[in-house]
Length: 341
Image 1 (cartoon, rainbow, N blue to C red):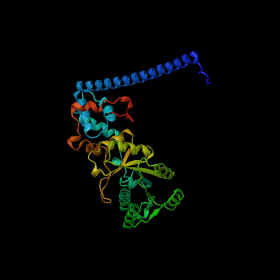
Image 2 (image 1 turned 90 degrees about the vertical axis):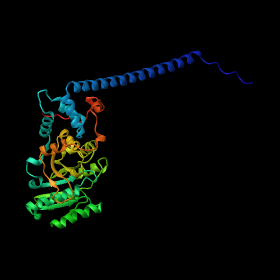
Image 3 (image 1 turned 90 degrees about the horizontal axis):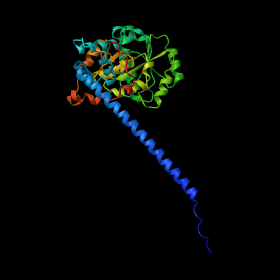
Image 4 (image 1 turned 180 degrees about the horizontal axis):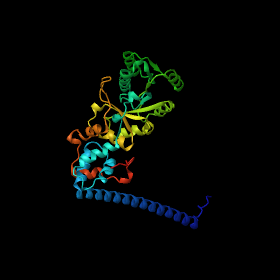
């Protein structure tokens, strides 16, 4: 004979029900707090954008300058810093902005050329930015002034046959042998062998900025005698340039070379990154000719080139659309520059 089911304990049922109710209430409170925080952030963002747009409407010179710099490819973070220093007694805001940009842009144009300084330089950068061609340009410019006997060439790009042979071809033209280093030990041996040379140039493998091997390359080049030069494609988008600068630790480099200037529709993004990260532009590579397309431009020349703007009208914002760009909270801007007025 089957026993009847045991009666449910009313105290245990009440306790379980109370626990479920408490958990539901806690979850609802957390959801409400999350919604309130989101709403608060949205309100602050909207009010910040409205306040900025109202300021631009009250000060049309700032609005005109902001739109011009934006059309030239400069970032909202840098534009905000610049327009904050614009006073009402400035007659020509564009000329004033050009002077501010020029003062904050470091360039080798006014000092001795890179090929006249000598030293050991490793050219690093992402894939396809023109490191090998730039290496050949610097080598040819140096050899023309100081003789090929004072030049050493090293490549770390052994697994990319095309680039390896390209540098060797340039070396044969210059009468300079190209040495290959496969690891840190062989690189140190080559540096010892070439220690009497006035200039040694090291061409490296092109790697995407997010490639895990990028860190290994930087560690391999951490020798005390080596100064790194970051080659940046001036035709890249601003966000891509920013990513490359961070990944390749541009702040620890001796300078930056802007390549593919002839392909860049706008120079603003590259100069913007150099200003915000306080990087020195040591040379310009603007084409494929060696060494004719190797230049040293002053900060003023680079800024004037950038302020010419360019590009299709499809990518230009109307004055009424400025709030779409400047709506981001100012506190979230990364690497905001300190601009000297």
